[in-house]
Image (cartoon, rainbow, N blue to C red; front, side, top):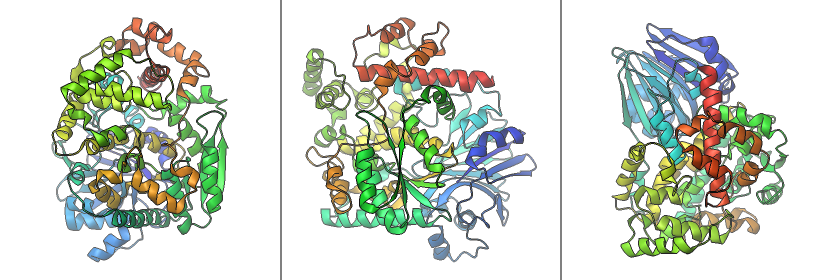
Length: 613
Protein backbone atom coordinates (compact mmCIF):
# COMPACT_ATOMS: atom_id res chain seq x y z
CA UNK A 1 0.00 0.00 0.00
CA UNK A 2 1.39 3.35 -1.00
CA UNK A 3 0.77 6.87 -2.17
CA UNK A 4 1.59 7.83 -5.75
CA UNK A 5 1.74 11.02 -7.78
CA UNK A 6 3.11 12.20 -11.10
CA UNK A 7 3.02 14.86 -13.75
CA UNK A 8 3.51 15.62 -17.42
CA UNK A 9 4.54 19.18 -18.34
CA UNK A 10 4.19 20.35 -14.73
CA UNK A 11 6.94 20.54 -12.13
CA UNK A 12 5.96 18.97 -8.81
CA UNK A 13 6.87 20.54 -5.49
CA UNK A 14 8.42 17.35 -4.09
CA UNK A 15 8.91 18.48 -0.46
CA UNK A 16 5.26 19.58 -0.27
CA UNK A 17 4.09 16.41 -2.00
CA UNK A 18 6.09 14.33 0.45
CA UNK A 19 4.45 16.15 3.34
CA UNK A 20 0.94 15.61 1.93
CA UNK A 21 1.36 11.90 1.11
CA UNK A 22 3.72 10.84 3.88
CA UNK A 23 0.99 9.04 5.85
CA UNK A 24 0.27 6.82 2.82
CA UNK A 25 3.90 5.71 2.61
CA UNK A 26 6.16 6.60 5.52
CA UNK A 27 8.76 3.88 4.85
CA UNK A 28 10.38 5.25 1.70
CA UNK A 29 9.91 8.15 -0.74
CA UNK A 30 11.39 8.20 -4.24
CA UNK A 31 11.08 10.39 -7.33
CA UNK A 32 11.73 9.42 -10.95
CA UNK A 33 12.20 12.00 -13.73
CA UNK A 34 12.61 11.63 -17.47
CA UNK A 35 12.18 14.53 -19.87
CA UNK A 36 8.80 16.15 -19.05
CA UNK A 37 7.60 13.25 -16.87
CA UNK A 38 7.81 12.96 -13.09
CA UNK A 39 6.72 9.94 -11.03
CA UNK A 40 6.65 10.07 -7.23
CA UNK A 41 6.18 7.12 -4.86
CA UNK A 42 5.54 6.83 -1.12
CA UNK A 43 5.94 3.28 0.15
CA UNK A 44 4.20 1.51 3.00
CA UNK A 45 6.22 -1.72 3.08
CA UNK A 46 4.01 -4.79 3.45
CA UNK A 47 4.91 -7.37 0.79
CA UNK A 48 8.52 -8.23 -0.18
CA UNK A 49 9.90 -5.54 2.06
CA UNK A 50 13.41 -6.03 0.69
CA UNK A 51 12.57 -6.30 -3.02
CA UNK A 52 9.48 -4.14 -3.42
CA UNK A 53 11.16 -0.78 -3.86
CA UNK A 54 9.63 1.53 -6.50
CA UNK A 55 9.70 2.80 -9.19
CA UNK A 56 10.45 -0.50 -10.91
CA UNK A 57 11.78 -0.82 -14.44
CA UNK A 58 11.51 -3.58 -17.04
CA UNK A 59 12.17 -3.53 -20.79
CA UNK A 60 11.25 0.07 -21.49
CA UNK A 61 8.57 0.23 -18.79
CA UNK A 62 8.61 2.11 -15.47
CA UNK A 63 5.88 1.65 -12.84
CA UNK A 64 4.63 3.20 -9.62
CA UNK A 65 1.92 1.22 -7.87
CA UNK A 66 -0.50 1.64 -4.97
CA UNK A 67 -2.28 -1.48 -3.72
CA UNK A 68 -1.95 -5.24 -3.61
CA UNK A 69 -2.33 -7.99 -6.22
CA UNK A 70 -3.29 -10.99 -4.11
CA UNK A 71 -3.02 -13.58 -6.89
CA UNK A 72 0.21 -12.29 -8.41
CA UNK A 73 2.02 -15.60 -7.84
CA UNK A 74 -0.68 -17.47 -9.75
CA UNK A 75 -0.35 -14.95 -12.60
CA UNK A 76 3.43 -15.50 -12.63
CA UNK A 77 2.99 -19.25 -12.81
CA UNK A 78 0.28 -19.08 -15.48
CA UNK A 79 2.51 -17.13 -17.88
CA UNK A 80 5.88 -18.46 -16.66
CA UNK A 81 7.23 -15.01 -15.88
CA UNK A 82 10.86 -14.91 -14.80
CA UNK A 83 11.01 -12.31 -12.03
CA UNK A 84 13.89 -11.23 -9.83
CA UNK A 85 11.85 -10.36 -6.70
CA UNK A 86 8.75 -11.55 -4.86
CA UNK A 87 7.06 -8.20 -5.40
CA UNK A 88 3.60 -7.99 -6.99
CA UNK A 89 4.78 -4.74 -8.61
CA UNK A 90 7.22 -6.71 -10.77
CA UNK A 91 4.42 -9.12 -11.71
CA UNK A 92 2.33 -6.21 -13.01
CA UNK A 93 5.20 -5.05 -15.22
CA UNK A 94 5.69 -8.49 -16.77
CA UNK A 95 1.93 -8.95 -17.25
CA UNK A 96 1.57 -5.55 -18.91
CA UNK A 97 4.55 -6.25 -21.19
CA UNK A 98 2.97 -9.50 -22.36
CA UNK A 99 -0.76 -8.67 -22.36
CA UNK A 100 -1.11 -4.89 -22.43
CA UNK A 101 -4.38 -3.61 -20.95
CA UNK A 102 -5.73 -7.18 -20.95
CA UNK A 103 -3.50 -7.92 -17.95
CA UNK A 104 -6.07 -6.18 -15.75
CA UNK A 105 -8.47 -9.08 -16.25
CA UNK A 106 -5.96 -11.38 -14.55
CA UNK A 107 -5.58 -9.44 -11.32
CA UNK A 108 -7.45 -10.02 -8.08
CA UNK A 109 -6.64 -7.07 -5.89
CA UNK A 110 -6.99 -3.42 -5.09
CA UNK A 111 -4.82 -1.21 -7.21
CA UNK A 112 -3.96 1.98 -8.95
CA UNK A 113 -0.78 1.96 -10.99
CA UNK A 114 0.89 4.19 -13.56
CA UNK A 115 3.19 2.66 -16.17
CA UNK A 116 5.43 4.83 -18.32
CA UNK A 117 5.58 3.03 -21.69
CA UNK A 118 8.53 4.45 -23.61
CA UNK A 119 7.69 2.61 -26.83
CA UNK A 120 4.23 4.20 -26.94
CA UNK A 121 5.38 7.47 -25.30
CA UNK A 122 2.43 7.35 -22.93
CA UNK A 123 1.35 6.77 -19.37
CA UNK A 124 -0.99 3.84 -18.79
CA UNK A 125 -2.95 4.40 -15.56
CA UNK A 126 -5.38 1.74 -14.29
CA UNK A 127 -7.77 1.32 -11.35
CA UNK A 128 -9.28 -1.80 -9.75
CA UNK A 129 -12.80 -3.12 -10.31
CA UNK A 130 -14.56 -1.70 -7.25
CA UNK A 131 -12.43 1.43 -6.82
CA UNK A 132 -10.74 0.42 -3.57
CA UNK A 133 -7.68 2.54 -4.33
CA UNK A 134 -8.19 6.20 -5.36
CA UNK A 135 -6.62 8.23 -8.15
CA UNK A 136 -7.33 11.89 -8.91
CA UNK A 137 -5.92 13.81 -11.86
CA UNK A 138 -5.76 17.35 -13.22
CA UNK A 139 -5.93 17.83 -16.97
CA UNK A 140 -6.25 21.14 -18.84
CA UNK A 141 -4.92 20.14 -22.27
CA UNK A 142 -1.44 21.49 -21.50
CA UNK A 143 -0.41 19.60 -18.38
CA UNK A 144 -1.39 16.48 -16.48
CA UNK A 145 -0.93 15.92 -12.74
CA UNK A 146 -2.17 12.96 -10.69
CA UNK A 147 -2.11 11.92 -7.04
CA UNK A 148 -3.65 9.45 -4.59
CA UNK A 149 -5.41 12.22 -2.66
CA UNK A 150 -7.19 15.43 -3.55
CA UNK A 151 -5.37 17.48 -0.93
CA UNK A 152 -2.06 16.63 -2.60
CA UNK A 153 -3.36 18.02 -5.91
CA UNK A 154 -4.85 21.06 -4.20
CA UNK A 155 -1.48 21.96 -2.73
CA UNK A 156 0.33 21.54 -6.06
CA UNK A 157 -1.99 23.57 -8.28
CA UNK A 158 -4.08 26.78 -8.14
CA UNK A 159 -7.39 24.94 -8.43
CA UNK A 160 -10.80 26.57 -8.87
CA UNK A 161 -14.08 25.28 -7.46
CA UNK A 162 -16.56 23.69 -9.86
CA UNK A 163 -19.92 25.06 -8.65
CA UNK A 164 -21.92 22.53 -10.68
CA UNK A 165 -20.18 19.63 -8.96
CA UNK A 166 -20.74 21.20 -5.54
CA UNK A 167 -24.44 21.48 -6.42
CA UNK A 168 -24.36 17.79 -7.34
CA UNK A 169 -22.90 16.97 -3.92
CA UNK A 170 -25.53 19.02 -2.05
CA UNK A 171 -28.36 17.51 -4.06
CA UNK A 172 -27.23 13.89 -4.11
CA UNK A 173 -24.89 13.81 -1.03
CA UNK A 174 -21.99 12.42 -3.09
CA UNK A 175 -19.85 13.18 -6.12
CA UNK A 176 -20.70 10.79 -8.92
CA UNK A 177 -17.39 9.86 -10.44
CA UNK A 178 -15.45 11.28 -12.22
CA UNK A 179 -16.69 14.53 -10.64
CA UNK A 180 -14.68 16.27 -7.90
CA UNK A 181 -15.09 19.69 -6.23
CA UNK A 182 -12.58 21.28 -8.62
CA UNK A 183 -12.52 22.36 -12.26
CA UNK A 184 -10.33 20.23 -14.51
CA UNK A 185 -9.86 17.68 -11.70
CA UNK A 186 -11.32 14.22 -12.13
CA UNK A 187 -11.32 10.90 -10.36
CA UNK A 188 -10.41 7.96 -12.54
CA UNK A 189 -13.58 5.87 -12.13
CA UNK A 190 -13.49 2.35 -10.73
CA UNK A 191 -12.88 -0.32 -13.37
CA UNK A 192 -11.29 2.16 -15.78
CA UNK A 193 -7.90 2.84 -17.28
CA UNK A 194 -6.50 5.98 -18.93
CA UNK A 195 -3.91 6.45 -21.63
CA UNK A 196 -2.08 9.77 -21.33
CA UNK A 197 -0.07 10.82 -24.37
CA UNK A 198 3.24 12.47 -23.46
CA UNK A 199 3.36 14.23 -26.82
CA UNK A 200 0.06 16.16 -26.72
CA UNK A 201 -0.97 15.43 -23.07
CA UNK A 202 -4.36 14.07 -24.18
CA UNK A 203 -6.23 11.77 -21.79
CA UNK A 204 -8.38 8.89 -23.04
CA UNK A 205 -10.36 6.92 -20.45
CA UNK A 206 -11.69 3.41 -21.13
CA UNK A 207 -13.89 1.23 -18.95
CA UNK A 208 -12.37 -2.23 -18.69
CA UNK A 209 -14.75 -3.77 -16.09
CA UNK A 210 -18.37 -3.26 -15.04
CA UNK A 211 -20.46 -5.20 -12.55
CA UNK A 212 -23.50 -4.59 -14.77
CA UNK A 213 -22.44 -7.30 -17.22
CA UNK A 214 -22.36 -9.84 -14.38
CA UNK A 215 -25.87 -8.90 -13.22
CA UNK A 216 -27.03 -9.66 -16.75
CA UNK A 217 -25.80 -13.26 -16.45
CA UNK A 218 -28.23 -15.89 -15.19
CA UNK A 219 -26.58 -18.48 -12.96
CA UNK A 220 -28.56 -21.68 -12.48
CA UNK A 221 -26.68 -23.00 -9.44
CA UNK A 222 -28.95 -24.53 -6.84
CA UNK A 223 -28.83 -23.08 -3.35
CA UNK A 224 -26.54 -25.77 -1.94
CA UNK A 225 -24.08 -25.30 -4.80
CA UNK A 226 -24.19 -21.51 -4.37
CA UNK A 227 -23.71 -21.97 -0.62
CA UNK A 228 -20.64 -24.16 -1.06
CA UNK A 229 -19.19 -21.99 -3.83
CA UNK A 230 -19.59 -18.81 -1.80
CA UNK A 231 -18.00 -20.49 1.21
CA UNK A 232 -15.05 -21.60 -0.91
CA UNK A 233 -14.61 -18.22 -2.60
CA UNK A 234 -14.73 -16.40 0.72
CA UNK A 235 -12.06 -18.71 2.11
CA UNK A 236 -9.86 -18.15 -0.94
CA UNK A 237 -10.33 -14.37 -0.77
CA UNK A 238 -9.60 -14.14 2.95
CA UNK A 239 -6.68 -16.56 2.82
CA UNK A 240 -4.99 -14.62 0.02
CA UNK A 241 -5.48 -11.34 1.88
CA UNK A 242 -3.98 -12.77 5.05
CA UNK A 243 -1.09 -14.60 3.43
CA UNK A 244 -0.01 -11.93 0.92
CA UNK A 245 1.58 -9.83 3.64
CA UNK A 246 4.95 -9.98 5.34
CA UNK A 247 3.33 -8.19 8.29
CA UNK A 248 0.60 -9.30 10.70
CA UNK A 249 -3.00 -8.99 9.47
CA UNK A 250 -5.89 -8.16 11.85
CA UNK A 251 -9.62 -7.62 11.41
CA UNK A 252 -12.23 -4.95 12.12
CA UNK A 253 -15.22 -6.44 13.95
CA UNK A 254 -18.38 -4.33 13.89
CA UNK A 255 -20.93 -6.77 15.31
CA UNK A 256 -22.49 -7.54 11.92
CA UNK A 257 -22.30 -10.77 9.95
CA UNK A 258 -19.94 -9.47 7.22
CA UNK A 259 -17.08 -8.60 9.54
CA UNK A 260 -17.99 -11.60 11.71
CA UNK A 261 -17.58 -14.01 8.79
CA UNK A 262 -14.34 -12.36 7.70
CA UNK A 263 -13.00 -12.68 11.25
CA UNK A 264 -14.11 -16.29 11.69
CA UNK A 265 -12.45 -17.43 8.46
CA UNK A 266 -9.36 -15.24 8.93
CA UNK A 267 -8.71 -17.00 12.25
CA UNK A 268 -8.08 -20.19 10.28
CA UNK A 269 -5.13 -18.55 8.55
CA UNK A 270 -3.86 -16.38 11.42
CA UNK A 271 -4.07 -18.21 14.76
CA UNK A 272 -3.05 -15.06 16.66
CA UNK A 273 -5.63 -12.84 14.93
CA UNK A 274 -6.21 -9.44 16.52
CA UNK A 275 -9.69 -7.89 16.24
CA UNK A 276 -10.87 -4.32 16.81
CA UNK A 277 -14.26 -2.83 17.55
CA UNK A 278 -15.52 0.44 18.95
CA UNK A 279 -17.67 0.87 22.02
CA UNK A 280 -19.67 3.85 23.19
CA UNK A 281 -22.81 4.37 25.23
CA UNK A 282 -26.25 4.25 23.66
CA UNK A 283 -28.25 2.36 21.05
CA UNK A 284 -25.40 2.25 18.53
CA UNK A 285 -23.01 0.28 20.73
CA UNK A 286 -22.07 -2.90 18.84
CA UNK A 287 -19.31 -4.02 21.20
CA UNK A 288 -21.32 -6.79 22.98
CA UNK A 289 -22.12 -8.58 19.70
CA UNK A 290 -18.56 -8.19 18.44
CA UNK A 291 -17.33 -9.66 21.72
CA UNK A 292 -19.37 -12.83 21.10
CA UNK A 293 -17.41 -13.49 17.91
CA UNK A 294 -14.09 -12.58 19.52
CA UNK A 295 -14.77 -14.97 22.40
CA UNK A 296 -15.87 -17.82 20.14
CA UNK A 297 -12.70 -17.62 18.06
CA UNK A 298 -10.43 -16.56 20.90
CA UNK A 299 -9.04 -13.58 19.01
CA UNK A 300 -6.81 -11.03 20.68
CA UNK A 301 -9.64 -8.54 21.00
CA UNK A 302 -9.37 -4.78 21.38
CA UNK A 303 -12.47 -2.85 22.39
CA UNK A 304 -11.90 0.84 21.78
CA UNK A 305 -14.09 2.82 24.14
CA UNK A 306 -14.92 6.14 22.56
CA UNK A 307 -16.45 8.90 24.63
CA UNK A 308 -15.90 11.45 21.85
CA UNK A 309 -14.53 13.89 24.42
CA UNK A 310 -12.03 14.91 21.77
CA UNK A 311 -14.57 15.06 18.96
CA UNK A 312 -14.75 18.85 18.84
CA UNK A 313 -10.99 19.17 18.52
CA UNK A 314 -10.73 16.30 16.01
CA UNK A 315 -13.70 16.74 13.66
CA UNK A 316 -12.17 19.41 11.42
CA UNK A 317 -9.00 17.34 11.03
CA UNK A 318 -11.01 14.20 10.25
CA UNK A 319 -13.07 15.90 7.55
CA UNK A 320 -10.04 17.76 6.15
CA UNK A 321 -8.30 14.47 5.39
CA UNK A 322 -10.83 13.68 2.65
CA UNK A 323 -10.01 16.69 0.50
CA UNK A 324 -13.66 16.93 -0.55
CA UNK A 325 -16.99 17.28 1.27
CA UNK A 326 -18.11 13.86 2.51
CA UNK A 327 -21.65 13.17 3.68
CA UNK A 328 -20.96 9.97 5.61
CA UNK A 329 -20.73 10.79 9.33
CA UNK A 330 -19.38 7.31 10.07
CA UNK A 331 -16.01 8.69 8.96
CA UNK A 332 -15.66 9.57 12.66
CA UNK A 333 -15.76 6.09 14.25
CA UNK A 334 -13.83 4.77 11.23
CA UNK A 335 -11.08 7.27 11.99
CA UNK A 336 -10.87 6.32 15.66
CA UNK A 337 -10.93 2.55 15.16
CA UNK A 338 -8.22 2.86 12.49
CA UNK A 339 -6.12 5.01 14.80
CA UNK A 340 -6.38 2.38 17.53
CA UNK A 341 -5.64 -0.55 15.19
CA UNK A 342 -2.48 1.08 13.86
CA UNK A 343 -0.97 0.96 17.34
CA UNK A 344 -0.91 -2.85 17.00
CA UNK A 345 -0.50 -3.67 13.29
CA UNK A 346 -0.37 -2.32 9.73
CA UNK A 347 -2.85 -4.49 7.76
CA UNK A 348 -6.55 -4.84 8.60
CA UNK A 349 -9.44 -6.80 7.05
CA UNK A 350 -12.97 -5.39 6.79
CA UNK A 351 -16.40 -6.38 5.47
CA UNK A 352 -16.80 -3.59 2.90
CA UNK A 353 -18.98 -4.53 -0.06
CA UNK A 354 -20.92 -7.29 1.67
CA UNK A 355 -24.18 -5.34 1.85
CA UNK A 356 -24.06 -4.08 -1.73
CA UNK A 357 -23.12 -7.50 -3.13
CA UNK A 358 -25.25 -9.88 -1.02
CA UNK A 359 -28.28 -7.61 -0.38
CA UNK A 360 -27.83 -6.39 3.18
CA UNK A 361 -29.93 -3.22 3.48
CA UNK A 362 -33.56 -3.26 4.63
CA UNK A 363 -34.55 -1.12 1.65
CA UNK A 364 -33.70 -4.03 -0.64
CA UNK A 365 -36.67 -6.06 0.62
CA UNK A 366 -39.41 -4.17 -1.26
CA UNK A 367 -37.30 -4.08 -4.44
CA UNK A 368 -37.04 -7.88 -4.28
CA UNK A 369 -40.84 -8.02 -4.51
CA UNK A 370 -41.54 -5.18 -6.94
CA UNK A 371 -39.59 -2.96 -9.34
CA UNK A 372 -40.26 0.46 -7.84
CA UNK A 373 -38.23 2.08 -10.62
CA UNK A 374 -40.98 1.05 -13.03
CA UNK A 375 -44.02 1.23 -10.81
CA UNK A 376 -47.57 1.59 -12.05
CA UNK A 377 -49.63 4.77 -12.02
CA UNK A 378 -51.84 3.25 -9.30
CA UNK A 379 -48.94 2.40 -6.97
CA UNK A 380 -47.40 5.84 -7.33
CA UNK A 381 -50.64 7.74 -6.67
CA UNK A 382 -51.73 5.52 -3.80
CA UNK A 383 -48.32 6.06 -2.17
CA UNK A 384 -48.64 9.81 -2.70
CA UNK A 385 -52.03 9.86 -0.95
CA UNK A 386 -50.71 7.77 1.91
CA UNK A 387 -47.60 9.92 2.30
CA UNK A 388 -49.74 13.03 2.89
CA UNK A 389 -51.50 11.51 5.91
CA UNK A 390 -48.66 9.61 7.59
CA UNK A 391 -46.95 11.26 10.58
CA UNK A 392 -43.22 11.96 10.27
CA UNK A 393 -40.68 9.35 11.31
CA UNK A 394 -37.99 10.35 13.80
CA UNK A 395 -36.43 6.98 14.72
CA UNK A 396 -34.01 5.63 12.11
CA UNK A 397 -34.12 2.06 13.40
CA UNK A 398 -37.89 1.70 13.89
CA UNK A 399 -40.20 -0.43 11.76
CA UNK A 400 -42.35 2.63 11.22
CA UNK A 401 -39.40 4.48 9.70
CA UNK A 402 -38.93 1.59 7.30
CA UNK A 403 -42.59 1.76 6.25
CA UNK A 404 -42.54 5.55 6.01
CA UNK A 405 -39.52 5.56 3.72
CA UNK A 406 -41.09 2.82 1.58
CA UNK A 407 -44.15 4.99 1.00
CA UNK A 408 -41.90 8.01 0.38
CA UNK A 409 -39.86 6.49 -2.44
CA UNK A 410 -42.90 4.70 -3.89
CA UNK A 411 -44.47 8.08 -4.69
CA UNK A 412 -41.39 9.35 -6.60
CA UNK A 413 -40.26 8.99 -10.21
CA UNK A 414 -37.01 7.77 -11.73
CA UNK A 415 -33.79 8.91 -10.10
CA UNK A 416 -35.81 10.50 -7.29
CA UNK A 417 -37.01 7.03 -6.33
CA UNK A 418 -33.39 5.99 -6.03
CA UNK A 419 -32.34 9.03 -4.01
CA UNK A 420 -35.27 8.57 -1.63
CA UNK A 421 -34.54 4.89 -1.16
CA UNK A 422 -30.85 5.32 -0.28
CA UNK A 423 -29.19 8.41 1.25
CA UNK A 424 -32.38 10.51 1.22
CA UNK A 425 -30.93 13.88 2.22
CA UNK A 426 -32.58 16.79 0.39
CA UNK A 427 -35.25 14.69 -1.33
CA UNK A 428 -38.57 16.54 -1.03
CA UNK A 429 -36.81 19.84 -0.35
CA UNK A 430 -35.28 20.43 -3.78
CA UNK A 431 -37.13 23.73 -4.21
CA UNK A 432 -35.01 25.23 -1.44
CA UNK A 433 -31.76 24.50 -3.29
CA UNK A 434 -30.17 26.88 -5.76
CA UNK A 435 -29.10 25.63 -9.17
CA UNK A 436 -30.55 23.36 -11.81
CA UNK A 437 -31.42 19.68 -11.78
CA UNK A 438 -29.06 19.53 -14.78
CA UNK A 439 -26.23 18.88 -12.31
CA UNK A 440 -27.74 15.42 -11.90
CA UNK A 441 -27.46 14.61 -15.61
CA UNK A 442 -24.49 12.19 -15.28
CA UNK A 443 -26.34 10.36 -12.48
CA UNK A 444 -29.56 10.41 -14.51
CA UNK A 445 -27.81 8.95 -17.55
CA UNK A 446 -26.36 6.08 -15.56
CA UNK A 447 -29.71 5.45 -13.86
CA UNK A 448 -31.52 5.31 -17.22
CA UNK A 449 -28.97 2.81 -18.53
CA UNK A 450 -29.55 0.49 -15.57
CA UNK A 451 -33.30 1.03 -15.46
CA UNK A 452 -33.77 0.30 -19.17
CA UNK A 453 -31.97 -3.04 -18.85
CA UNK A 454 -33.62 -6.40 -18.26
CA UNK A 455 -32.54 -6.56 -14.60
CA UNK A 456 -35.03 -7.12 -11.78
CA UNK A 457 -35.82 -4.34 -9.33
CA UNK A 458 -33.44 -5.84 -6.75
CA UNK A 459 -30.63 -6.24 -9.28
CA UNK A 460 -31.05 -2.64 -10.37
CA UNK A 461 -30.72 -1.17 -6.90
CA UNK A 462 -27.80 -3.47 -6.07
CA UNK A 463 -26.08 -2.41 -9.31
CA UNK A 464 -26.76 1.27 -8.60
CA UNK A 465 -25.51 1.06 -5.02
CA UNK A 466 -22.29 -0.63 -6.12
CA UNK A 467 -21.58 2.06 -8.71
CA UNK A 468 -22.77 5.03 -6.62
CA UNK A 469 -22.80 4.62 -2.85
CA UNK A 470 -20.03 2.05 -2.50
CA UNK A 471 -17.63 3.62 -5.02
CA UNK A 472 -18.38 7.28 -4.30
CA UNK A 473 -18.81 7.14 -0.53
CA UNK A 474 -18.11 3.98 1.45
CA UNK A 475 -14.78 3.00 -0.12
CA UNK A 476 -13.62 6.62 -0.04
CA UNK A 477 -14.48 6.75 3.65
CA UNK A 478 -12.50 3.66 4.57
CA UNK A 479 -9.48 4.37 2.37
CA UNK A 480 -8.85 7.75 3.98
CA UNK A 481 -9.76 6.59 7.50
CA UNK A 482 -7.18 3.80 7.33
CA UNK A 483 -4.45 5.42 5.26
CA UNK A 484 -4.47 8.59 7.39
CA UNK A 485 -2.93 6.30 10.02
CA UNK A 486 -0.69 4.38 7.57
CA UNK A 487 -3.00 1.37 7.95
CA UNK A 488 -3.81 -0.82 4.96
CA UNK A 489 -7.45 -1.93 4.70
CA UNK A 490 -8.28 -5.10 2.76
CA UNK A 491 -11.81 -6.09 1.66
CA UNK A 492 -12.25 -9.82 0.93
CA UNK A 493 -15.90 -9.34 -0.07
CA UNK A 494 -14.66 -7.38 -3.09
CA UNK A 495 -12.49 -10.20 -4.41
CA UNK A 496 -12.57 -10.72 -8.19
CA UNK A 497 -14.26 -14.14 -8.07
CA UNK A 498 -17.00 -12.95 -5.70
CA UNK A 499 -17.65 -9.81 -7.75
CA UNK A 500 -18.11 -11.95 -10.84
CA UNK A 501 -20.13 -14.76 -9.23
CA UNK A 502 -22.56 -13.31 -6.67
CA UNK A 503 -24.33 -10.83 -9.04
CA UNK A 504 -25.35 -13.72 -11.30
CA UNK A 505 -27.16 -15.61 -8.52
CA UNK A 506 -30.98 -15.54 -8.23
CA UNK A 507 -32.55 -12.72 -6.21
CA UNK A 508 -34.01 -15.18 -3.70
CA UNK A 509 -30.49 -16.07 -2.55
CA UNK A 510 -30.00 -12.45 -1.50
CA UNK A 511 -33.43 -11.44 -0.20
CA UNK A 512 -35.85 -14.16 0.86
CA UNK A 513 -39.23 -13.09 2.19
CA UNK A 514 -38.40 -10.23 4.52
CA UNK A 515 -34.86 -11.43 5.24
CA UNK A 516 -31.90 -9.58 3.79
CA UNK A 517 -28.57 -11.16 2.87
CA UNK A 518 -30.16 -14.60 2.92
CA UNK A 519 -27.20 -16.60 1.54
CA UNK A 520 -24.69 -15.00 3.91
CA UNK A 521 -27.02 -15.46 6.89
CA UNK A 522 -27.27 -19.17 6.14
CA UNK A 523 -23.49 -19.30 5.80
CA UNK A 524 -23.20 -17.46 9.10
CA UNK A 525 -24.99 -20.32 10.86
CA UNK A 526 -21.88 -22.36 10.17
CA UNK A 527 -19.48 -19.84 11.69
CA UNK A 528 -21.13 -17.30 13.99
CA UNK A 529 -23.00 -17.23 17.32
CA UNK A 530 -26.75 -17.52 16.81
CA UNK A 531 -27.34 -14.13 18.42
CA UNK A 532 -25.79 -12.43 15.37
CA UNK A 533 -27.53 -14.30 12.58
CA UNK A 534 -30.75 -12.31 12.38
CA UNK A 535 -29.45 -8.98 13.59
CA UNK A 536 -30.08 -6.00 11.28
CA UNK A 537 -27.22 -4.54 9.24
CA UNK A 538 -24.45 -3.16 11.42
CA UNK A 539 -21.41 -1.04 10.73
CA UNK A 540 -19.49 1.63 12.57
CA UNK A 541 -22.56 3.86 12.98
CA UNK A 542 -23.04 6.98 15.12
CA UNK A 543 -25.97 8.78 16.81
CA UNK A 544 -25.93 11.66 14.30
CA UNK A 545 -29.06 13.49 15.42
CA UNK A 546 -27.79 13.47 19.01
CA UNK A 547 -24.47 14.99 17.95
CA UNK A 548 -26.08 17.65 15.78
CA UNK A 549 -28.19 18.79 18.74
CA UNK A 550 -25.55 18.05 21.38
CA UNK A 551 -21.78 17.69 21.26
CA UNK A 552 -21.31 19.39 17.88
CA UNK A 553 -24.19 21.85 17.99
CA UNK A 554 -22.19 25.02 18.67
CA UNK A 555 -19.46 24.16 16.17
CA UNK A 556 -21.94 23.34 13.42
CA UNK A 557 -23.85 26.55 14.09
CA UNK A 558 -20.67 28.63 13.86
CA UNK A 559 -19.98 27.15 10.44
CA UNK A 560 -23.34 27.03 8.64
CA UNK A 561 -25.23 29.91 10.31
CA UNK A 562 -22.56 32.51 9.59
CA UNK A 563 -23.96 35.20 7.22
CA UNK A 564 -21.10 34.56 4.78
CA UNK A 565 -21.23 30.76 5.00
CA UNK A 566 -20.28 29.18 1.68
CA UNK A 567 -23.16 26.66 1.82
CA UNK A 568 -25.60 29.56 1.47
CA UNK A 569 -24.66 29.71 -2.21
CA UNK A 570 -26.43 26.40 -2.65
CA UNK A 571 -29.25 26.42 -0.08
CA UNK A 572 -31.72 29.23 0.51
CA UNK A 573 -30.60 31.02 3.72
CA UNK A 574 -34.16 31.24 5.06
CA UNK A 575 -34.61 27.50 4.64
CA UNK A 576 -31.32 26.88 6.41
CA UNK A 577 -32.31 29.10 9.34
CA UNK A 578 -35.73 27.46 9.58
CA UNK A 579 -34.21 23.99 9.40
CA UNK A 580 -31.86 24.82 12.27
CA UNK A 581 -34.72 26.28 14.35
CA UNK A 582 -36.91 23.21 13.67
CA UNK A 583 -39.47 25.22 11.76
CA UNK A 584 -39.29 22.87 8.78
CA UNK A 585 -41.58 19.86 8.89
CA UNK A 586 -39.20 16.92 8.62
CA UNK A 587 -38.03 13.92 10.63
CA UNK A 588 -35.21 14.32 13.15
CA UNK A 589 -32.92 11.93 11.30
CA UNK A 590 -33.45 13.63 7.95
CA UNK A 591 -32.92 17.05 9.51
CA UNK A 592 -29.62 15.87 10.97
CA UNK A 593 -28.50 14.51 7.58
CA UNK A 594 -29.25 17.79 5.79
CA UNK A 595 -27.38 19.78 8.44
CA UNK A 596 -24.42 17.40 8.42
CA UNK A 597 -24.17 17.52 4.60
CA UNK A 598 -23.87 21.31 4.73
CA UNK A 599 -21.49 21.24 7.69
CA UNK A 600 -19.15 18.86 5.83
CA UNK A 601 -19.27 21.20 2.82
CA UNK A 602 -18.46 24.22 4.97
CA UNK A 603 -15.53 22.52 6.71
CA UNK A 604 -14.10 21.48 3.33
CA UNK A 605 -14.43 25.01 1.97
CA UNK A 606 -12.74 26.67 4.92
CA UNK A 607 -10.15 24.03 5.81
CA UNK A 608 -9.22 22.53 2.43
CA UNK A 609 -9.90 25.31 -0.05
CA UNK A 610 -9.53 28.70 1.62
CA UNK A 611 -6.49 27.79 3.74
CA UNK A 612 -4.62 26.85 0.58
CA UNK A 613 -6.01 29.58 -1.68
